[in-house]
Length: 382
Ligand code: UD1
Ligand code: UDP
Picture 1 (cartoon, rainbow, N blue to C red):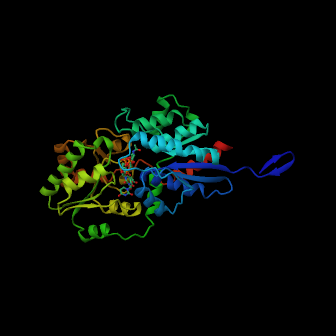
Picture 2 (picture 1 turned 90 degrees about the vertical axis):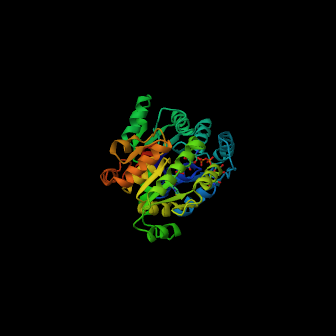
Picture 3 (picture 1 turned 90 degrees about the horizontal axis):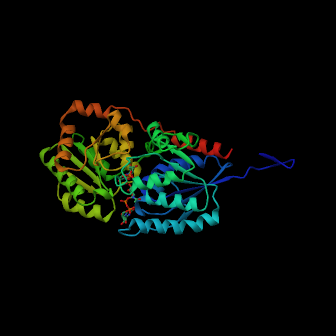
C-alpha cells in the first residue's frame, strides 16, 4: 500500500512483458512465468510469443500449461534472420503500444530476443535479460547468437546471469555490478518441474526395451553446422554404431528443413539409429536420464545433461559455457569426422573417463533461479 494525499491507495501492479519464440527460450522462461504468477498482487505478466518456432514452441507451452496473451505467429519455412528480426520488431510494436509494459524480459540469444529487446529500447521500456553474459567472444560462433547476446546486453537494464563466470564477462565489458545478479540457470528449474511429470512415449519404451545398450542421445541444429560439419557428424556416428554393436542412437530431429534433409539422407537407414520427431520437453528429459551420453551442438543440453549426471560431447569448436569444461562434464570436440568418432568411442570404451565425466558436479544452478529473478525484479521496482 502507498500513502498518497493522506489516503491509502493500491500500489500499481507492474506489467511484465515476457517475450520468447523458440523452444529453448520457452523452456527457460516458463519457470519465470510460473514464479511471477505466484505474486498476483504485485505483477501482471503479459506473455508475448513470436512463434519463431511454431510446433516446437507449442509443445513447450502445453507441457507448462502456458497460454500466451499475444502470438505474432511469424514462422516461415527457411526463414532468414532478417525475416525474423523485422517481423518481430514490427509485430511487437503494436503490443507494446497497447500494453505499455513496465519491464520487458527476454532470454538468451535468439533473434526473437534481440528484436524484442530492440523494440523495448525504442519504447524506452526497461529490459531484463535472463541468461545474460554468455560469451565466446567470436561473433560468428555461434552465429548469430554471439552477436545477438552482445547486442542485447548493450541495452539491458537488469542482467540475470547464470554463473559467476558470466558475471565476470559483463564486468570486463564495463557493466555496472549493481545491475547484475547471479541467479543460476532457469534450465535447472525446468528440470525440477518436468521430473514430476508422468509421461509415456514410444521412444522411452524403445530405450527401456534395450536396457543394456549404450544409448547416445544426439541433437544437432546450429546454423554454423549446416552443410559439411553436420554431414561429418552424421557420418562419424554411423561409423561409431557400425563398430559398436552395443551403441544405439536416439535423434529427435530438429524441424529445420536443412537438418531434416541431412539427417534422413545420412542416418535414415540404420537399424540402431532412431530418427524421431522432436520430443516434448518432459519426455526429452526422461530420455536424457536413460541415455549413456549426450552428443550435441545445443546450448541448453550443455546445462541440463550435467544436472542428470550425463557426460556431454559438444559438437562445436567453442562453447560459451566454460563452467562445464572446468568441472569436467563437457568436452568440446568440434565437427571433424575422425575426432567425433574417436571421442565418442573413447567414452563408450573407457569406463574411468566415463565415470569422471558423469560424476562431476553440475555448475549451472540449483533450481531456484526463477525465484531469484522475481525477487530482483521486485527490488528493482521498490
Ligand atoms: C533458433 C535460434 C537458435 C536456437 C534454436 C533452438 C535464432 C537465429 N536461432 O534456431 O539460437 O538455438 O532456435 O532450436 O534465433 N521449424 C519448424 N517448426 C518449428 C521450428 C522450426 O518448421 O517448430 C523450421 C522452420 O522451417 C524454420 C526453421 O526450422 O524456418 C529454422 O528455424 P529458426 O528459428 O530460424 O532457426 P533455428 O535453427 O531453429
Ligand atoms: N529439447 C526438447 N525436445 C527435443 C530436444 C530438445 O524439449 O526433442 C529441449 C532440451 O531439453 C533443451 C532445449 O530443448 O531444454 C534445447 O533446445 P535446442 O537444442 O533446440 O536449442 P539451444 O539450447 O541450442 O538454443
